[in-house]
Length: 292
Image (cartoon, rainbow, N blue to C red; front, side, top):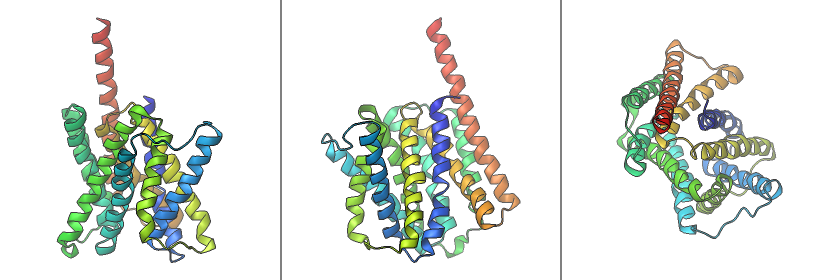
């Protein structure tokens, strides 16, 4: 297996723990903006310690600050603002459903920005994972969804896709750890005005877990993956996140797991495998052409 595909899968698995940590944190009455702020703050501390201690480098860079400001605004502040606002005015299931319009945007952006091929296999995989996400998201009452929720939800998917594009540009000239550090740093600045700067002590361990697993590990792994994997393929494979999320919810919180959700999970995993296998075949074809 190509290392980049494995990193995308591991990153998505880390992101799948997000709902678990959030469930525990919400029990302490922490609001969404404050939770995201401390998630980013603790992730910065962990990442900064890792870079200075193990990489023996300065986590800050003064090059292309405008790029990291845009990246932090779109990839951290806008993404989470739109996501949590969509949850507030609709439902978690609807918000999750529209987050995973991101692969469709990623396929289009990958084609437009990087010239990534729009192969038939990629289109089939995209349809599989989008339909799978609809099934995994559960029973969404579309009759209660207003137009604003639809707009903000689609905006969540778009900003998620743009994150991948910006990451692809960032890791071309800089190490993924520093790219993530600078992105989170600017995201933190944008989040600060909306944050309550105190949380119950009992919530702190869960906030640290939220910072370490789905933030530090998740995004570092994903940024590393984008050094080798197309944005469109990475985004499709990353849809295994809701599969991990519903599996963990079933194990830890004994939430029901319907046959429809299991079927959706199979479609998502199948689409991800298809993307990996077709990507592998195309690399082998290119190698054969180079040899001959």
